[in-house]
Image (cartoon, rainbow, N blue to C red; front, side):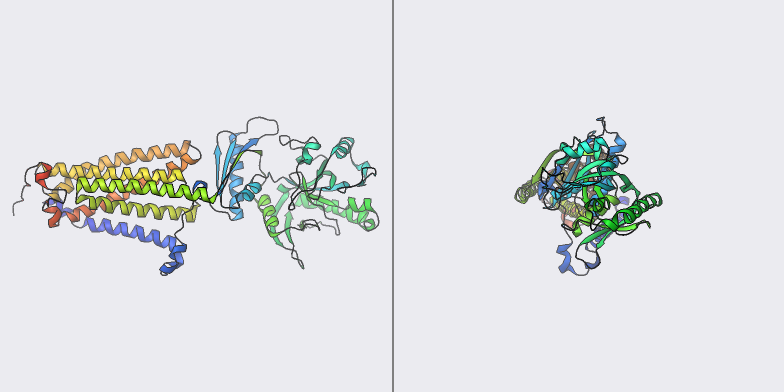
Length: 533
């Protein structure tokens, strides 16, 4: 017949194209280890979400200084900065998603999730300010306690300095409770007022009154972390823009000329010779000025008692490089997932998928007999493409598979099986009319492919809409559902149809063997028409 003749070369072309796709995906995963199969086990890794591994998930609520709802532009900018900070740390598998009008959901797989989230939620408003008053932690209450020049401090700041209560932090961090004692609030963020004097504390619990900012983090044009020469400590090298470099040169010139000569013998001069690096209101370090810094390039280090580690220096660089958050955030909720709970969820998901696949296989063999082998082979190809796709996304796009994602893959088994049923039934309808299998495959395919495409299009659009408007784990379900729907189209067009075209030429299937699933007597049709020689 004409239909079988015109399709003679197509099956092999489609199968070859599918094979090429699989080979390209394999090479993209294995890379330089393509010809070293012994190393492949290190490449085929699927990123797992929190519910399947372990890690931390937190919901951050945005706050504006005046208490108004944050604008969509500000939320998008904040989410973008958070994502950039994550990428800057080298952490993979982190998800930063907007949730509603003022919430951002951050999920970090792995044991270090809490540390990453602590780093992400820092607003990173940096400024350099001259120290005007300094009081060491634990000074006797009967003594004046502070050093510096009180006449340089305005009355309001002197009053705050007197109210301020500092406490030592842990692991080099500042105990932020001091902000409440000074009357500072996260919504107002008074400590970031660049043009005003402020009070602050450092990690050791020391108390400071600071002048207006000489320059801010936005004035930094480049930054990088490096070892301090001749030391095991780390520092951060900064380059300022021209106005900031000029202002900093004026300040350090005055300090070096007026205070540095007396700093060794005069405690008040030693304090005024210091410039504090302030990050989100906390004093990170307050080094003395030993040179005039008017070139716009200099290095900052931690305090002598707690110098920067590589992690702290890199964290500061990341915060400065990707910018300050336009909003302040408070934690609405925080959840930690244990590795044991994640492993249990993964096993449950895989078990559910195995049971679902087993039921589909049993049904196809029971109802379609020999055609069940075609359906199972197609499911295997679809599973292989899905697995390779997830591995590729995990490798290059930091995709993480969650439990709802596995649910989407399980649902896709039914969608793929649905396509087989449509095609098989169209073939059987044609054979009931007396056509040979080779003719029935071609005519049945013309009738089935439109139905398959319409069905898969509807499923894909539903997944797309769900992904676009849903949040959280529902997006994982929608993504995997959409991915496997596309794979279903590839498998049906690239494998199921051409393999049936080839099998129709065999005696077992083409001759209507009673176990082939295409026995005319069992189908209730009449004997196939013979084409004249």
